[in-house]
Image (cartoon, rainbow, N blue to C red; front, side, top):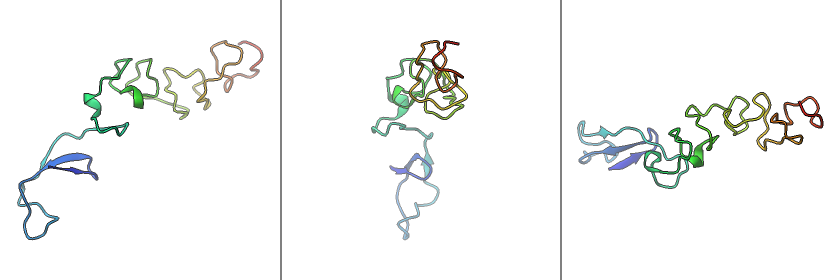
Length: 114
């Protein structure tokens, strides 16, 4: 059994012919593709750290405390839309200097609550 990096699948086969890069006949059996998003050697489906139970492990979840299985992140700031306080402007630190629930990056005047 080997890991086919190009297809991200485990491959089982019984041997090779004269060309060591070609498996014998049609002995390749592809197993379902799996993911190891945090690259710790444990397949994601075997990980148990998914606090919000959305099917995405916490290490790779853009919003680990709020369920968002599609991992939507409209402003591409690495904070999932379910947790983002400013969906239209990147604000990865979620700064909200007046504590009004609207991120400073979206506020017209950060010093005045909205």
